[in-house]
Amino acid sequence: MAVLSEMTSTRRLILLFTSISVLLVGASVASLLYLSHTINKLSDSLYSDVYQNSGLLLNADRDLHQAALALQTAVGGALTGEERSRLSQEFEDNNAQAQQRIATASYNLDAVKSPFNGMKQSELLLDELRGELDQFNLSLAEWKNTGREWISQRVQHDWNPASYSLLTVHTELNETRGSLDQAEELLDSYARQVMQEFRNLKSSLFAVYSVFLFLLVLVIIYLSRRLITLQNEMLEEKSLYQLIGETMSDFIVLTDPNGLILYASPSHASALGYVPSKGAPLSNYIREAEISWAKLKSVVQSSPRISELRMRSAEGHWVWLETKVTPITGSRTFPAQFMLVSREITQRKQYEERLHKLAFYDHLTAIPNRAHFKMYMENLINQPEDHRQEIAVALLDCDRFKHLNDTLGHLAGDEFLQMLSRELQQTVKGYGQAFRIGGDEFAVVLHRFNSPQVLDEMLNRLLQLFNKTWSFNHGASFHTSASIGVALYPKHGSTINELLRAADLAMYRSKNNGGNEASLYSEHLDNNYNSQRN
Image (cartoon, rainbow, N blue to C red; front, side, top):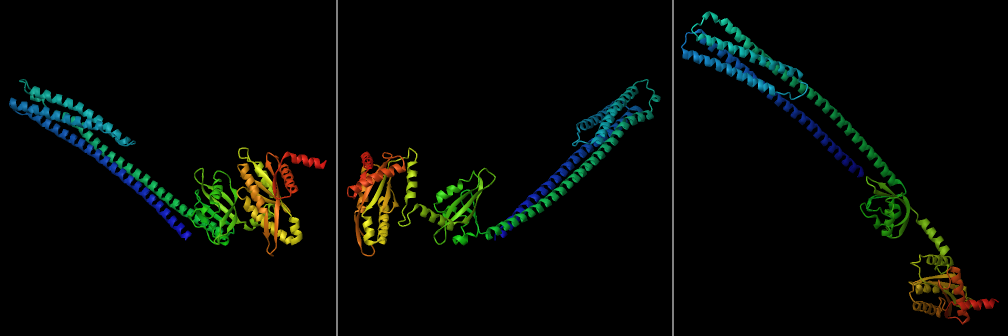
């Protein structure tokens, strides 16, 4: 199912990439078509301008022809003064209209600008065309002056018809029209050149775009194949990692930064009887979750570390795991995920616990022993000053315990010590801790009292605990009491040995007084002890 999901994701990614590629190709083709349309519009616009100017030149040529006819009629025929005046005005009007048309054409040509760089040949033709129109204006001025002179001479009385020559009129007219004809040819050449240059430009652009699209398609094909190859490699790697995770004996858990499980290897089932659920908080499976998860999150900005965790099995008991927690860094400073690789150490922890009990707990009564007493006292004495509190160390010796062993046997003595230890633990619970430091001698450390009255009350409860009749399984009974000696820290000593010595002196004072008594250490006990030694 995981492989199928990965394949679906790959197909979606390829489909997305293909869609983007098609959009790029479509955008390129659309850009090319738009550019072609723009070039066609520019070409049509230039062609329209050329056609308009060509019409102006043709109309100017027609105007010259009409002016020549008016001149020939006005000079050659027998006309009245009014008719000759009308023809003279017609000559002037046609020449003026031709000049106006040429001026308009010249203005249009001066406004023409090439839309693209590199159209040098058409620019040269355009410059030559402007020169021909300027030459036409000069020829037109000479033609108008000659016509005016002939019309002026015709109305005079000394007019000599021999001075007028139709050949001369045609020669002047042809010189004027020659520049116009040359301009028309140049305008036609310019139009053809512009169209050819536009066609060449379109061909170049189409060639460039064709190469670009071809390269784009090749890149798309290459990237698609590369993407598919990378996806297949990733699937193979993931399948390999999954195979490793499913077959290895260690337990693997992958979580996000919030502790939600992203993956749990099937190997958990061999130790826990189940596989932790994907999406569930890891803290659901860890004992003392708030403490354990705080440990895990402390690796966010540090190197990997080894932690010992307990996870609940399907049967309800706790399984010890030695876990290496590694942050997997993402795109940010903080890790994107946590990798937990664990192995079961339940047997080792049980063995360590047995060793710990052997070292720090009495094997007969199961309460803390002398070594534990020493460690417990060192922790209390070494507390910081602002947390340090008054400590009472009480040594308890069972009166007549030797008589119990001699009369009822050592098994009864052992049973008595076990019962006494259980009740002693319950009596001091919440105020301190009880220890068996040897034989029938016990030590009680009291450090959770806030007044001498509370301490006196606890000592009375201890005396009452001992001062009663004990019944045994075989029906016998035994009445006992206790001698208790108490020393206070730091009043009676600043070290463990000093406190034990002071409490021991106080305990022997209680014994000397007949037992069933709790005595507090005082300095005169030292004086008595020293005098007895001397």
